[in-house]
Image 1 (cartoon, one colour):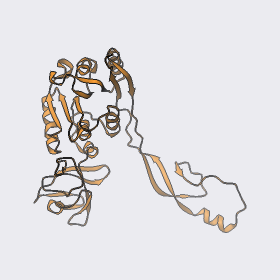
Image 2 (cartoon, rainbow, N blue to C red; image 1 turned 90 degrees about the horizontal axis):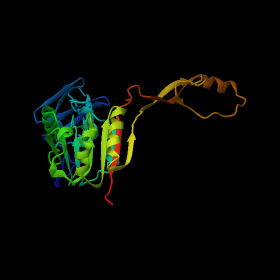
Image 3 (cartoon, helix red, strand yellow; image 1 turned 30 degrees about the vertical axis):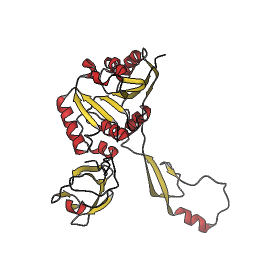
Image 4 (cartoon, rainbow, N blue to C red; image 1 turned 120 degrees about the vertical axis):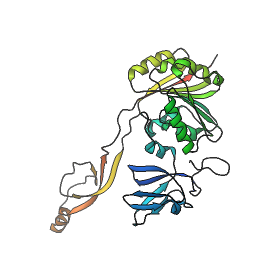
Length: 310
C-alpha cells in the first residue's frame, strides 16, 4: 500500500514494512508491483529475492538476489503506478495527468468529481493532489471495472482519499449530494456534452471543468454546450517527446549527420601532421536522438471555468 506516516499523510521517507506495496525496478521499461510478504520470494532473470531482506530497507534501496543480481525497491508513487497498473481501459499518462492537475487548480483539501474511472491512472494522481484533507469521488458505469479499481485503491492505500461509485453519469448525472460542493470536475466519457449540465450544477462558483476526448468532433460538441454557462474555454493537445542522451564514439574527420552534439565550428588554421593523426582517431562524444518509443496523440483536453453569477 501507499506508505503513510503517523499522521496518516502520504510519506515515502519511512522504511519498507511487511504488507507494503513496492515497485520492483529492473530497468526503465521492466517494472512490476509486488506486495511485500515475509517468507515470500520473487524470482526473475537476476535470481531469487527474499522479501524478508527487503523489510526495514528505505524505499529506493538496492536489493540483491542469491546470484548477486539486483533490483531497486521503489515507492509506489502515482507516476510509477501509472506504468505498472492493469490496463482495463485506455489510460491517461504522466504528461496529460500533470497538465490536468495544474489546469484544474487542484490543491490539498479539494473535492474532485471524476466520471470514467477506467483503470484508475488519473484517480491515483488526483488522490495525492488533494491529500490529506480532500477527497476524490470517481464514477464508472461498468460495475466490474469499478470493483477492480476499488481493489487497486485498497492495494495502494488510497481508500481514505477515494470513493468509487457505479453510475451512468451521461444518463443520470452526478449525485445530488454534491450540488455546489465540487472544486473541480473531470470527464472522460464518449459523449461528455450530456454530462456537462450536471457538472455545472456540482461545481462551486469559479470551479473548473476538464473533458478528455480522443476525437476533435467530441471537442466541438462539448464546447458548444460549455458556452452557455462557462468561460475561459481552452483546448490542448499534449505531445511529449523524449530523447536518449548517451556517450558514443565517432570519427572526428567525418561529418556527423546522426544528431550528435559536438564542438561549435571554428576558423580553419594550419595544422601539424601530429594533430591530423590524432583527429583521425575515433573520439568520444555525446549522442542525442529522439526515443523510438515516444507516444503520439492521446487525446484533447478541454478546460472551462464556471461563470460567476453577477
